[in-house]
Image (cartoon, rainbow, N blue to C red; front, side, top):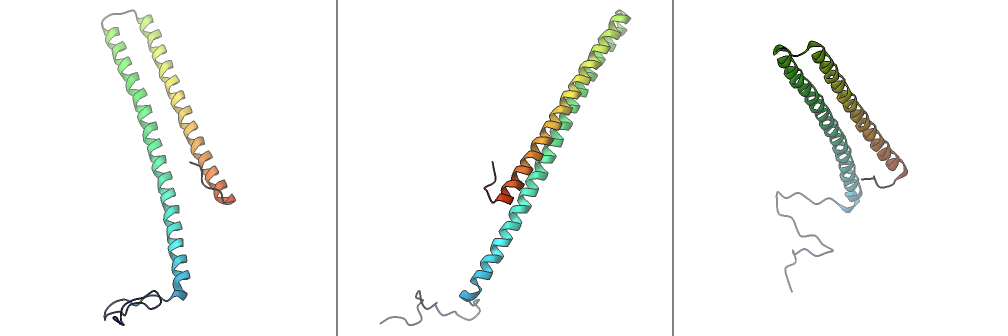
Length: 141
């Protein structure tokens, strides 16, 4: 007829020595639960890591914005200083310096507002995720 040691859907193949014995069907539910819990832990860790990465990227962008503003200010002040050394009107130089400083302060204010906007956007996204998890809905994109 055929090989009696062949595997069938009702009878698993016989194991040679040294092979791991298959788990019985009774432990399948527990094994599935372990896998599900591990996947949920990994998903939670992945979300936390993504939040941390986004936060680090936002901080880097913020620092770059501030450094660009400060570099621009120093560059303009250097040009103003060179113009003053060449004998330009002192009163004009002072008013120009005032305008430069006001512009830099304005840029820093705008940068601060951008940071506040991004922080609120992240908090809003986190609250939406928590709400979706609490109500059992799919997480928004």
